[in-house]
Image (cartoon, one colour):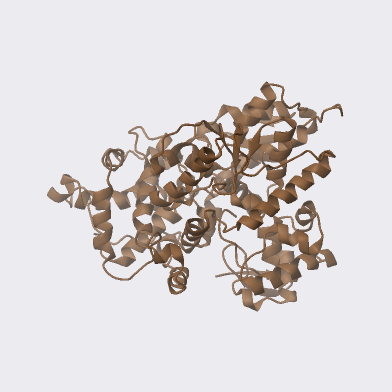
Length: 474
Length: 106
């Protein structure tokens, strides 16, 4: 294989940092000790990589690996390439070709017959695998804008996740990905929140809502049987930002919802989507589905989180091999229903500032939830304006694909965020609303870096602001 | 490794603007980080109450405290933390207290 030239971004040469892996192994951490989470061991990793590759290629993957005609249309759709137009390693096709060439050399007949002609090749050693890691983790946010725009139907996002999964099995992963996977395997939630801390924070938020509404009947019910709604959240809401839990509890209370949160199985996020580890994906998603079954809930509602929505609503059922018996929806769909059915009353003049909406990749492109948030925003804001492009064509916040947990790739992420920053600035809006916690941080990073006069909000916050409380008038 | 320069002094930080070597934190570093990363020209007694608690918690448990614990220890309501540190508890308060970046969706 021809040695890949390091991209001018420098990302391709980022070393493998296995300090946390070694520490987890020394400490005998359960996820590592029982083999659920692999650590990096120097040795014959290339052979293992090729075995895994050959055994895992499914039909949809084979299509994406073989159908590319190298037309280059994907380049125009990728914010990495648009921000670095002189750098061919930023094109989705180049990134996908790094796995495609290995597939062609070892699996597809064309590479066995004429490898020189179709540029087939093999990784030679662990350094090559590490470079591949940097390509699939560090130069792609897996936002699938290129997939959406590919005339041949090549799913580069799928190829990137597949390759990440192979590398994860060898421990060739960024440190942040390892740490979060470890915590999610061992504690059932990605920020290692203990059950006691979880319950205490919910009680705290319940008391805050009671004070705010002057109503002691407000509850955040835990493990209540037979409710209409099982509400699941992102651990970050517990650990660092529980305001959204209070907003949801307030709205559920005012809408007269019969709802509960589970004691176990409350984390709807799923690092398996980012690391490519279907086993982790299955474990986390199954926790949520089983919680709903155990508590005989009628519906699973997912708080505002992009990859959590995609994982729990769509991919998780496949990973876990689980029959979908219950409807699963985003809380934004629930809010829309409350407004339409008159279960809550809202006044758009309470949100007078100009608001624009950022479609998250995992919600719009990969989750097919596009018009619902807009319908809610038009009802709760007096100046809602689109950014361009929007909906399924929107650009990534630059924090997708788990990139927020990989500090080593941040300089490139901020550099290519120029595309998003320009798009945000052009709206002239003071608030940018998004349904995703990754997007909140991705956008906040850009707002700070590019000095944009904006603030990030979520749909729950805007609906909560717009509420007209019973008996208090508009 | 990146550096930030403030008031003629240089501190080494990681790519996310968190202190490169958390063990080297001093009150002086906190002031510089607060200015460079949070735009805070001055740290008031209320800022220090939060920062000192986070620092002690981290040294004891090698872990960032959850916002619930910050509020319990200082007696501040939740919103006060966001008023004091514009980037919030994780990327604001923990950063000024010299912690490494917390793992996960932050």
